[in-house]
Image (cartoon, rainbow, N blue to C red; front, side, top):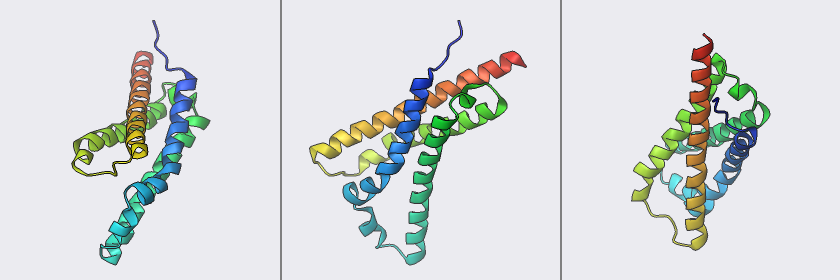
Length: 147
């Protein structure tokens, strides 16, 4: 029996990744008051922190667009599909590990909306890690069987 991740699930993952990119500025500004904290850094470190924030936002958006627009290509068991799904899986697995290993040490506002948001975002991150890990494994096993 051949296991295949359905397109609707992959596309939902892509939409979720775009969502994380779009919601990212709100989280930085409203939830974490990030820019006020960044102002305490030296000017160069401020720019480095902002740049990394933009990288994260850009990667989330780009991964989402790639997922939505190239769904079939992400599961066609080619070397490129293996590389790209492996990259995206590693990115989200790293995010999940970081989220649970380091972030619990910090306080987020206690408002119910932020607690609900935290659960929702963590659910998305775990879903992305699972979807792309599954794609990576199915691509890799299919590739190895055909070569």
